[in-house]
Length: 147
Image 1 (cartoon, rainbow, N blue to C red):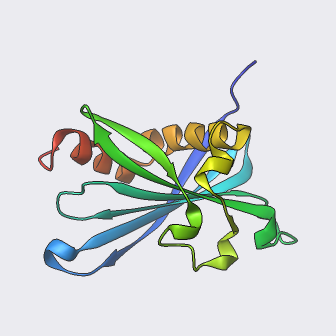
Image 2: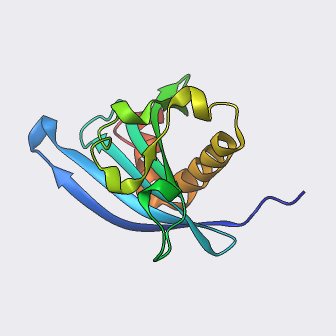
């Protein structure tokens, strides 16, 4: 079976705080076989990020879609053995939990080992490769701030 074509479209960013407390949030859109399929948010410290907080919103995005038509999956990305690895988190405990318009927060246990979980990790693989901003954060996590 052929893997679906995934296109990542980086969109915006916002900066928060100053100095060592400065943080950045990046976001973008994901299209699977040219259909809008997900939105992602990546949040990290500007100086020496220790982790990436990630939110992936998957589901329906059309004019008729409601938040009930979308699943919100939260993850954390950290360097383990010099490589970026992601772990599922309970979305209702994430920084975006109060944004009910995004969708229905998913518990990590409900996503782990499911088709939804596999799709989320496949999308994350493409986000890290196709969004240069996230790739730069990955390099800083895996190799230190000089990269």
